[in-house]
Amino acid sequence: GAMMIKATIDRFEENMVVLIFEQGNARRDVPRELLPAGAREGQHVLVDLDGEQISKIVLDEDETTQARERIQAKLERLRRGEHRKKTV
Image (cartoon, rainbow, N blue to C red; front, top):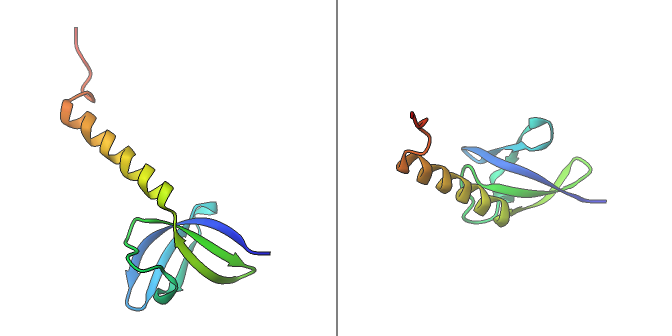
């Protein structure tokens, strides 16, 4: 049966895309046409894996949004200077 596996788009190379799978940090080159339109580097995707064959790739909107929110929160803290140790 097919499984959906989480991965991140690492980078684009000509007509290939390098994906990094969450499990074991495995890298895999996949044809660019398998990616959904509008996919960008750093985005999280769900890979529909049937054995060794990738049947389709969809954007993992939740994961991408959460990651973006985490980064935003981190930037906010840095901007406010919360990362600096308060000395008494």
